[in-house]
Image 1 (cartoon, helix red, strand yellow):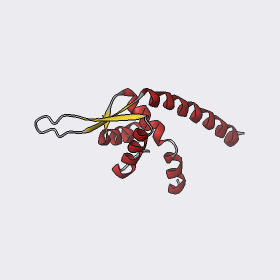
Image 2 (cartoon, rainbow, N blue to C red):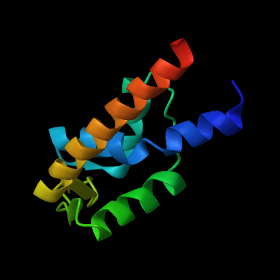
Image 3 (tube, rainbow, N blue to C red):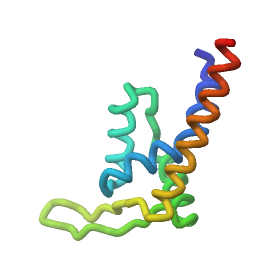
Length: 111
């Protein structure tokens, strides 16, 4: 597949899939990267430099909040992100929009 188009398509849904992962439980950045890669069959293989600006923007928009864990023995403190009520509402709106757009694209492509 042409990588330019693949990047553009994935970029458009990153907020939605990251919010979805955070809906299930709070996660730290690297955990999000690994789970996204695993659950997407490696379609989404993000670098930290891609993920963190998205998380910061989602936090700035009030869709996620973060908190630091306490260091425990050899475990270092980690910044965990969790979805807010506003983020849950926005996730549902984005997903409904995604379903609508996807359906219309199917109509065009299969029509």
